[in-house]
Image (cartoon, rainbow, N blue to C red; front, side, top):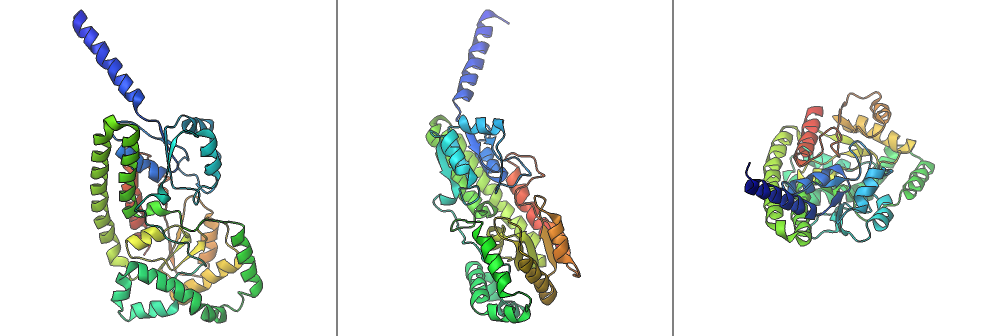
Length: 353
């Protein structure tokens, strides 16, 4: 190689290294959000993951490498304190100068309030569905809100009569346990809405472009391509779920209502609350009775939590069981993870039916 060519090669290598060094350092809280950020950064840089696959985001102890990633971050993307309250002070301490984006608060994000109680559908709503009231079923938000309100206002007395062993003391215990797990106003599992994922891709591209304007074109092109991929995914998931929409299922913890709303397929209840805290004996008994009385087809476990609780709930029941993984803990982190995560949810749900 001539001296001139060698000089040009070295110059190009140094310029490439300098450009990569100028790429913002990005830290992301959970695997699904990391996947969205990785898709937007494709070909430009790689974000750092703070909470490792397989770990519950509700409680987590940072490793030194994860703390260092936060400390070095120029940008931080996270769901917000409703999911990881312990991370609030950590970000303020380790990344005080970073641009922090709380996705649950981003413009255009669909936010759903927490569902209270273990059961999500009233008896009357189910009977209407069986008699062909499809119009209510097609109205996602109205159906969910009416079912929840009917359960609280009309179904409570019927359930109290059906569950004589669910005493006032049991209710007090449940409420006391709930108070120990304070949460914000909204369910934080918002990444399970592909609609939110598409919104967030543009938010992520905008934040990255503000920090790195030289690569703004790449960020927004990647976001557009990612949104197109998710639109295709929505069609595929809808086709997977359509044949089993008459089935009824219960989830391990109340983490899936964003997915349920996006695809108009509502769970009938949850063994545990949204923060995955241990359910009270009264709540378990209520779920067991509901499975027997309503002919629940499927009870879904999760890899992060105690499978013994699902086995207890299923005692004496013919319901099938399967596994939903809202975090994609068995998938390889990266840009391809998010579509696979959503597809896996639909496949597991359909298979369990």
